[in-house]
Picture 1 (cartoon, helix red, strand yellow):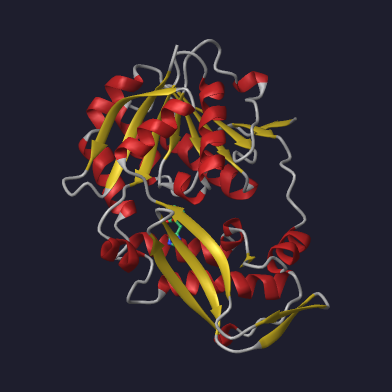
Picture 2 (cartoon, rainbow, N blue to C red):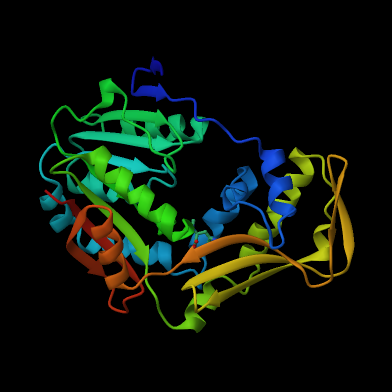
Length: 326
Ligand code: AVI
């Protein structure tokens, strides 16, 4: 564990092991159903495209979750209590955590956990400046794998509340979602809790439109992964020879995103040839949608009791307040 302190924040680096992305991509592309892991989306351009997705008319999750948090901030603050210890997984856009911090009047402790070190430190420092009464701790770690809080950041007997908004839980396969929630229950400990944002099951047309927006931003976001592989892994994907496909898979309860090869073709990645048949796809992302009962069941299996659920009037999105059982 490496520790560093700026004036404004405490910083801990667990040095998350970045997988060998070249071998990961090559392995994924040699499977019968070719795949590229969704974490590959988020280079600088991909992160900017994702921010644009969040502003699209068709992409309802971001604005719906924000409106749920805003409308219920007083009740949420009362549940968090005075001097709350908030642990945010993935310190994306700070808009949502600011709603909670405003509601608790900027007091307490905020622990941000993210794999992307520079972005993490930058946003933690910004928050520390905006909320001078808040203790801000940044931890560089891969939260999709179990990790323990560094001793200095340990919750010192205070129950913590994990904050995992954005329905990022939907990008985990069910077994990984269960493992993540189980390890979060262990991190926040007895008396601890979690605020979890989840995209709910709904009319298929609304879902399909959210991932096939009319401006083509989601298509750009999906195709950008090939541009990234070209640049970082010395590959020669022709982006115009692949098309964005996204559809709701009812059996699995998930949106699937794919890149479809528009012709028979061969692509080289660092000298290794990968061939594609016309119509063959690379599976790039799953985005699972849950019913309220499915979230309750998943949470219970992970050791949480669902204490409160807030939704929007159309039941598009749910924010779940989960308490560690026992
Ligand atoms: C980050 N994640 C919750 C988004 C989702 O909706 O699954 C990623 C995304 N993919 C396409 N549009 C948005």
